Every structure is written in structure tokens, then in C-alpha cells.
Image (cartoon, rainbow, N blue to C red; front, side):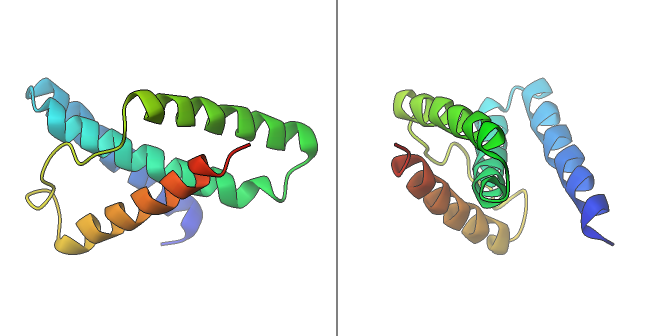
Length: 109
């Protein structure tokens, strides 16, 4: 599959899993899934920001600052064990993304 197809499929899959978790009152799992999605979005926004004009970069920077403020109030932590959701590879990847996202937010001016 090509990248334009994979991105919405990934979003649908993780959003659906978060919604199913919330409906089943598994809020810790839903929070963890949403935090992983947020980490991935931070990494993507940071990567594409350099190719944008100054107004677009400012919009991204403003949202990243809002995200940094959120993470200061609600520090990123593992809400739920994900081993039952996916392989250990996903867990390791999520932790690596978490660390990179935290670094990006910490470096905001």
C-alpha cells in the first residue's frame, strides 16, 4: 500500500480502538492510544514544519506549544499495558516516539 492510503487507515484503526476502549470503560487503554497518536502527530508536525512558510510554521509552533502545556499538566506516562494490543515492536516504537516527542516539546522556545 502507498503512504497516502496508510495514513488514514492507521488513523481509523487507532481511533476505532480508542473509541472501543472508551465504550468498554477501558479508559487507561484509550488514553494510552490517544497519547501515542499525539506523539506521532508531534513528530510529523515537527518534520513538515521546515518546508512550510512562516505563517504555517507559526500555526504548527502554536499548537506544539499548546501540546507542551498540556503535557506539563498531564505528563506522558504509560497508561495501560499494550502487550495485549500488539506486539512488543509496537510498544518499543511507541516508547521511542514518546521520547522524541518529549524532546521536541522541551526544545520549543
